[in-house]
Amino acid sequence: METVGLGFYYEDLPLGRQFKTIGRTVTEADIVNFINTTGMQEVLFMDLEFLEHSSDIKGRVAPGALAYTFAEGLLVQSTMQHTGYAFLNMELNVENPVFAGDTLHVECEVIEARLTSKPGRGLVRTRNKIVKQDGTVAIIYTPLRMIKCRDDSLVKD
Image (cartoon, rainbow, N blue to C red; front, side, top):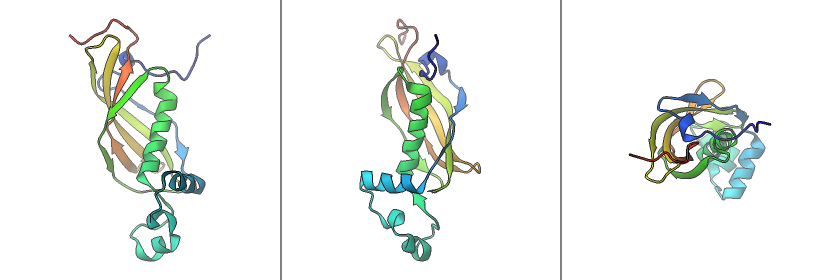
């Protein structure tokens, strides 16, 4: 019987491949729990009076780190089970705020794919856009990951 939900192998991620995840709505509880868990006790995230009267941002804003971790969760669930070996680095740019009530999904494009010198492993970099329900891009980041090859004998020339 086939097991669904397993990750992509290196061979499944050629340069230019694009895909998107399902969505996830950010709730007030998510924001509060994330702030308390991480210790991000900043007025932007905790003081609604400050947001209303002293900030350019209006509404219950979520930390960018929360949106990023939600994106990674959506990706891990759908693309990396049993095949992701390592998260190596990334660049991250916050483009727009995320608020309670926003539904996020991730749009990915493979922008780099190459084998390593160790058999059975490839490096894949994607451009990940965290997109809100209205099409607004909240964050763009470019993780480089080490991914398992389906063919264990593949190796960099």
